[in-house]
Structure formats: structure tokens, C-alpha cells
Amino acid sequence: MGKGLLIVLSGPSGVGKGTVCNELRRRLPDLVYSVSATTRNPRLGEENGVNYFFKSREQFEEMIANDQLLEYAEYVGNYYGTPRDFVEATLQSGKDIILEIEVQGALKVKSKFPEGIFVFLLPPSLDELKGRIVGRGTENQATIDHRMSVAADEIGLMENYDYAVVNDEIDQACHRIQSIIVAEHCKIRPRCEEVAAR
Amino acid sequence: MGKGLLIVLSGPSGVGKGTVCNELRRRLPDLVYSVSATTRNPRLGEENGVNYFFKSREQFEEMIANDQLLEYAEYVGNYYGTPRDFVEATLQSGKDIILEIEVQGALKVKSKFPEGIFVFLLPPSLDELKGRIVGRGTENQATIDHRMSVAADEIGLMENYDYAVVNDEIDQACHRIQSIIVAEHCKIRPRCEEVAAR
Image (cartoon, rainbow over all chains, first blue to last red; front, side, top):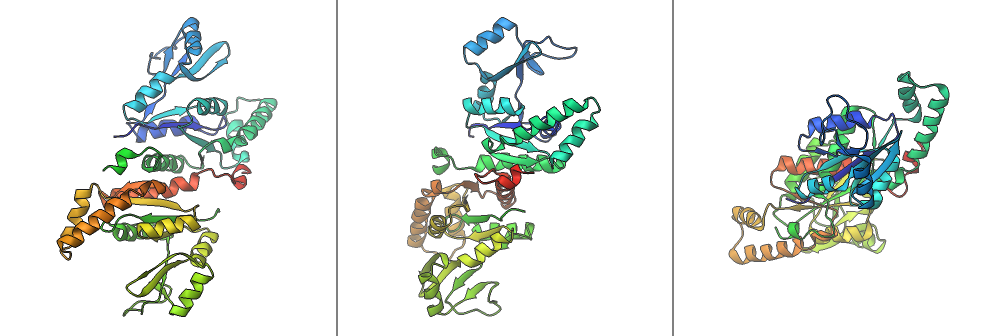
């Protein structure tokens, strides 16, 4: 058995990353979910190591200093990040791991872990994405305009990714990502002595 | 709709290329089969343009001179080759095309058409391959030894391919190749303006 693969699932806000990620985990019970570290307090029912790795600010800053995070960001006064150890231990055990993350975070992961498989989830069109954001009914016009402009910029960063998957239908989108995972396991990489020696 | 993909299915003799290729064509009715050109005479029931493009020796040598073949070889006094026009017209029409070919031929195709997807079909083991060759019951020991040695050399050339697919079970092997085709259609290539512009 070879090493597992890190699948980075990313794309603009509103494209449906979370829904697709959950459906993939349902279909692929062996696919491990990359658990984030955070300094925010646990909410009711949240478990350490399942929903998040809960850390104190000091612990988190030590992880930053020791380069133990593949990426991190501060959001509304709390840190969020991707612990490198958990990803690497999973891969070493031969299992695949999926990381669901926004575009800036994915690009940071790529700089530290270029051997990941970077999948960009696309809306069928920008109009469709707008419909989804408006449909939530929680945003005012200025916020919608801002989010659409951010999404357009993010789509412009797609060339840094390995694959583009259109999220037209969840079933089709998951099928495409599952195919990408199967194909990547068949890929011949520079070091493939173990396969050649069969 | 983008351009189609050329899928080159190759591997050592006896690995089951033909069986896998036929099953893929059955599952994927839109997958076009790359028809070879040959100077040998048509056999009963063979149709020009379906089984082969039947050519005179002069016509074939003109195709060679005009670089109209992605590869060719002479075998028992007859030429066999892959017409470039048929492949390119199929790809331009947006359809995928599959070329089933032995290892040396695949490497020639790669030199002329590096954008193809090169899939190496592997036996589960060399012992298994030997079993398949012996099982045909048509070969003497010297031939078997020779074919096994050729197969081992060919497996050594696998690093020139994009993907390795183990033909342990036809269903699994086809599923892997179908996944490779889906994944390759999602791949972000240097020129993907039409996707970025969605």
C-alpha cells in the first residue's frame, strides 16, 4: 500500500464546498477529514479532535512558530489553522485525507505541501453563484456585490489548482472528485519503484 | 465543449489490453476506437474504416513520407500504423479516442503526440502474466521465456507513461480507466481560458 493523498477541496464562498465534502465523506468512509485547530471556544456538542483541535492562544502561536501548520488565519479574533502533523500521520498510514478550505488558505497549503491534489469547485456560472448567495437571504446588496467580486477574483486563481470541478449537481460533482482520487492513485510518479517491482 | 482526449492503452503482450479495450468501448459508447491502417489484405467480414483502413504499399509509404502516421511498424511483411488524421479529427469533434497498442508503438505515439494520456496496463504480477501466456497453450518454453523477458523489459518502460492500472479484474481495471478519463477532463491545463471565463 502506498502513501495516502491529500485532497484539497476549495473554491469561492457559496459554491457548496461543505455540502460536497460531507457527501464525499458519506460515500468514502475511509476518507479522513482534516480537522482544523482553533483558539475559539468549543460550542455545545463539539468534541476535541473531531470538530476541531481546541488550543489556547499560546499553544496556537507555538504551533505557528514551530511551522506545525500548513496554513492559518485569524478571523474575528480567533485563530484557525490546519495542523501538519494530523495530515502527515494520516497520509503515512496510507489513508487519503480531505481538507475543505477557502481559496487563500488552499494556496498557502500548496506552498507548504505542493504534492497535494488541489481541486477547485466551480459554480455552473457566476449568475448561479449569485443566486445561491442571494438565496440565503442574509446578505445586503453591498455584501452580495463584495462577495461576487471576491468570487470572481478567486476564480481567477484557479490556474494554481490541479483540477476544476463544476458543482452543477452534487452527485456529478462527487463522482468527478471520486474519479480524480482513483486516477491520482493510478498516477505514475517519479518514484514508483514499488510498482515497477511487482 | 472542449477538445477530446487521446487515451493510449498499452502494456505487455498477454496483459489483456484487447479485453479491457472492448469492455471500455461497451461501457462508453461515445469513446471512439482508433482504427489502424494496414497493407495486409482484408479478411472475410472486415470493413474498410471499421476494422482497418486498408492501404496499398505505395499509399502507406506515402503516409509515412508525409508524416501522416503517429507510429507504424512492419510485421510479417505488412505495414501497420496509426493515422494521425483520424485521431485529430476525432479530438477536434470533442470526442475521446482510445488507441490500443503495444509498448514500443505507444512510446512512438508519445514522441509525436505528448498530450495523449498514456495508460500502462499491468498484470497483477509477473507470475500471473506467465500463467496467462502459458494458459493459451500455443507457445513453447523458449517462446514463453522470450515473451516473459520482453514483458519485464516493457514494464521497465512504464515510467514514460502517465498512469499504471493493474488488470487484476476487468471490472476494476475499466473503472480505474474510466476514472482517469473523467479526471483528465477536469484537469486544469495551462490554457484553460474558456473554463476561467465561465
